[in-house]
Length: 196
Picture 1 (cartoon, rainbow, N blue to C red):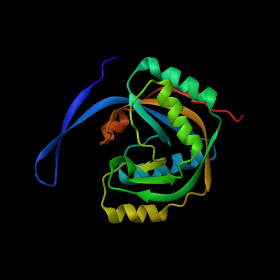
Picture 2 (picture 1 turned 45 degrees about the vertical axis):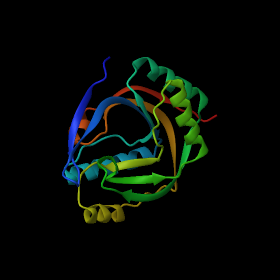
Picture 3 (picture 1 turned 180 degrees about the vertical axis):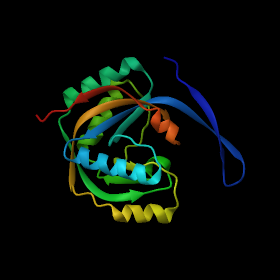
Picture 4 (picture 1 turned 135 degrees about the vertical axis):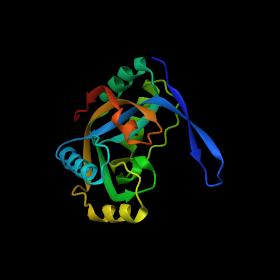
């Protein structure tokens, strides 16, 4: 399958247009186990409805790499075989001006997550230098900082730690900047993780 590339014009503060390459990639997601999965899905659905924003499934992105169908199954199979359930410590509810981190749960980076990132990258033969900053997004929407702060302050994650028990590979446009980008995401493969 051919990679799609588009140049997107952005207005910089200097008033000069910059061109940013957009491409189709595979994002590797870690999926929370129950009861956290249902809790976060409920929060995401509620925020999307109240803020006219796109809906999506709860996930932590572990790696983003090239759109190579032959690499996806191998990467997920090797990762599922090598890794057990992953537990991440919840740090805070954060917010930012970045579309894909409008409102999010920040997790602590640990050895198991670093190892999973490395296993997927190596199994996919992918040299992408994805920066691993574990978070679970709750809302994708451009909004003023004051509104983001208020929303972040209104949400309490009831889990000091979250267990993750599945992996998904999702074909998407990077960088994701719009509702249409989110709604075009497609899961291409999935694997369960098991306690060992």
